[in-house]
Length: 604
Image (spheres, rainbow, N blue to C red):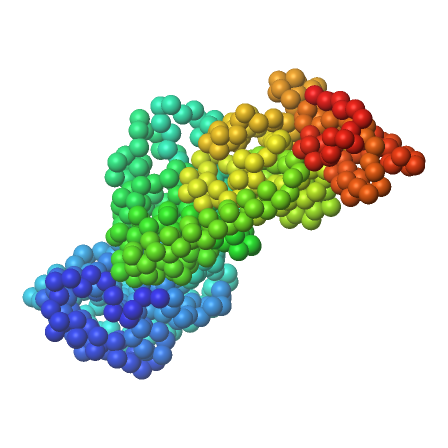
């Protein structure tokens, strides 16, 4: 919430600032629009400081706020008002400017914030005096629309006799339904999405990326009101899309009543700052949307640590110019998550917090490494584009209860379960955080501890949603991340998932022929699961041997280990000992005393 006196106070003498602060103590009678003395003080101060002044008053006649400078959205943020959609807000605004007419933006505020009225005082100089115009909300078929019902001009003295309450009651009697647009906090956020199409891009690619951004934004709980694409040879250094397009966005933000503009690429700190200053509302980019979704979905302590680290690394260079109070932290998309409260501290402490987070995540990595060293089981890691069906597959293969939702990044925390293969060998299988095109580097760095499950895996299962017509582009995005993790040399089984949703069998067969080491599968209904288990077994057979051995009864512990870690085909008891024929890993075979081994056969 803003302070009661706000705006551009630079260059104003303390004497006049004190006068404005004292004017906040004024209370008018409920039937009085405003007093002449109050308006005269306002005009006297404006004539000296040469800046616009805005005043907000409630129906009890209390002066709530005074702002120096132009009327903007933040002036109305967080003010208590009447909530009924069949009534006006109970707030009236006095706006003194040096222009004769009221700008369109102010008339939009009249509708967006359901103001009782807006009193516009046009001030040119003391000699010509002040011209006062009353702007009441405009209705069309019982609904508020942009514009105003204008009454006037009046002198200051004539304003005293105006029965403004009768006019407000008349408007409310006709008001049937009002679509409230501006809500404080993170509720009912509305956005325009913006993409940039350069010479190297295609319309199809840009449309796909914008559609994906729309899905991301909707996952974050934001309503998308429109999408804009700017064509340029290369991004503008200052505004990314160029100054002309920024002016178009200004009009669109008022037309749609949006409170956030979201760009489909990562903006530089300077570009983001320039855009926010010009558009006078929150501007975020694709990276910040993804970070916001991660902040909402992180449940484990480890996940929260990793998200907070990514948030702080992203936001640290962007603190410059956001004001001492870091006003973008009012709530909503781009400000949620574990890192939110930490941003109210200074840079030095933020850097210290980053160091502490990195140290804590390093400890997590060491713990994971210790756990992995004790497993002594082959590992299979499930990777893929977000929402491709990785968690559904894990649940199908094991008795896991991983969260399954039809939304992006529903799973952040790695789940690891045991899986027994048909060859008798047990493996550990884990899913990972989903990948996406333009996955923020901050997240890849922060999630190193989680992604180490991928780097340490013996086999990778690449889950692909073949119902998506751009599945190849999404596969490439996954492979790019895998290349960054330096794991492309590992065995990869490509799983063509969600085959149950495709009716044309020929289409599935064609895709399968195009992709090497691929299997058609439906994690939802179980189609192809047996083939997948057999394929995983084939990849692991080259690390297994078939043994015949005679164990003495004194070493029955070795038999327990073979049963636990391999597959026993024959088990016979005699006076000489226990005859075993089994298939086990080379690693376990090396732990068996050579004197007990009758024969050894490699399965590679």
